[in-house]
Amino acid sequence: MGSLNSPDYICAPFKFNLGNYIETIEKGADTLVQTGGLCRLRYYGELQSQIIKDLGHDVRFVTLAQGALSKPVNLYQSFKEINPALSLKQIGATLPMVMMMIETMDKVEDYVRKNSGFQNSPGNLEAVREDFLQRLRLTDSKKEVKKLYKKTTENLLDIPLNKPTNPIRVGIIGEYYTIMEPFSNHDIEKELAKKGIVVDRWINLTNTILRKDWKRKKRIRHYTKYSMGATSMFTVDQALRLAKQKYDGIIHVKSFGCTPEMDAMPVLQNISRDYKIPILYFSFDSQTSDTGIQTRLEAFYDMIMMRKGGLL
Amino acid sequence: MKTAYLGIDVGSISTKAVIIDQDNRILAKDYLWTEVNPIGTVKKLLQSLSRQMDRINKSQPPESYQVQSVGTTGSARRLIGSITGASVIKNEITTHAIGTISRHPEVRTIFEIGGQDSKIILIENGIVVDYAMNTLCAAGTGAFLSGLAQRLNEKVEDLGEIALTSDNPTRLAARCSVFAESDMVHKSQIGHSKPDIIAGICQSVVTNYLNNVAKGKRIFPPIIFQGGVSKNIGVARAFTEATGHDIHVDPDSHLTGALGTAILAKSSENRQPFDFQISEADFQTKGVNCEKCANHCEIIRVYRDKELIDAWGNKCDRGQADIFTE
Image (tube, rainbow over the protein chains, first blue to last red):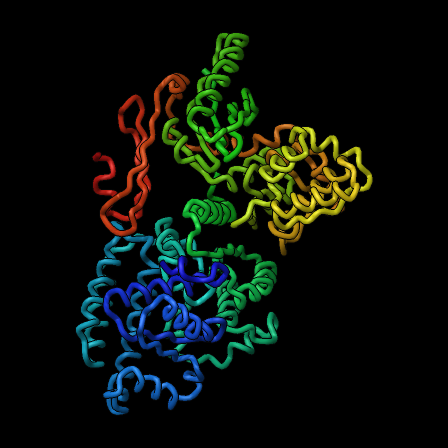
């Protein structure tokens, strides 16, 4: 539905967003929110609200893009626009809890990602995660979130793992939306885990929004001098970390036509050469075939096995 | 009895099969156009290989060869692997690398251009260290050459020889096959000769390959050029000119994938005597949509003489539950 009403050359996240908007309108939503960001995303709100208007839907469209991230006051104004009854006090009470929820979710996800491939019967870790997410919806204080996290950790650690001492480790880096939305990257993390691989993904809300890292620029200055926007600096920084930590391979994902990530690719090639770490590049559009991805992923896995001396 | 191994490479345009012995020597081989009928083509290939093996077995009594395991590769590897009971079903990047390394252990770079795909594989000390494959576009592959050959009213097999007669290749657009064709028509209308244009086409295949598939990769000799397009001597010459290195084309360069998967089948522990009679059996496939959720995964069921022998295509456990129940 998104692709049908989007310009063909726009990046896939735009299409997914638009499709989701139309679905929510059909289910009765009257206010849509677009966050904006640090690349073309900043302009998406404008374009999407226009397309939705042209389709004949009369809804309120709030774009948080206009300077919202730099000035908290603007952010507050935008929230007010969505819900006039909202008070500063309410935000003050809720925000820390929301932040904690995000951190907790990311921690649980990270553990599942790194260990999913080593369960005796697949799906156990995922079941705990599902249960955790269901319960998280019902929490309404920091204390409850904390308690739930403790219980979840116990449940996760209770699941027996069959992990070799030196498992294959692969890091995933790349563009914000594609990397975090499993449908748009064809469940790449699940596919890797199925092969018994530790999957590392640094990009999540905690690391990119809640925390600031002032040393990043210095760490990567040997490879890149100027910021190329959006997630490109994260990409370079994380590729360098994975290479230094002697990971077996890196997978770079982006939506087709994502300019900041495309700019980061030559830098990644330099890192790949200097540290002799293989990098597989994927570009996803809204209708990429599964087979092609499977072929390349399988070959990547074989290549790592060959390097480790285990294929023939 | 001596053991042998069968490797089948079912590509989009052509299907290749080899039988190798314990020392990776090719005993029997053949090559056919797939013509959008992978099962029928594989049956025909198996008949041909079976005849070749019979001849070898008759001429070298008393010990005869018996195929003990099968490997498949290429885009129809899953389907053909299923009907041949293959013990190895492997992607074409890995099998091409393994096949080439078995013949040329010193290789550093493999250029591969097939019917609809092209790839580059970089090798160090007999180990794959990097690779890339074309995405989203098949300009500059065998399909591109076939299309233009038809337009020129020449056989695609002859293009290479014709190209060699030219010493002034025409410059053609290489990015997109449709634009390359309009460019070709335009150049012919302003007076370029046919051999020059054909040589230009060969060059544009190379330009396209080096700029898209091999983009950003460091190319070291020895270089092996393979896949169907490697049979085109004009493209091979253009590669030599563009890279400044010798380009080696193996006489069996189109069989490398089949050879690689046969070698993998050899190292597989899963063995059972292969019966060439399957080329007589009747195979049917049926695609059905799983109705368990909104994703509607397409499930493929394969029948041998009306009996369901394999099924796949579901993405989740809900579909797996009754994938074999009709």
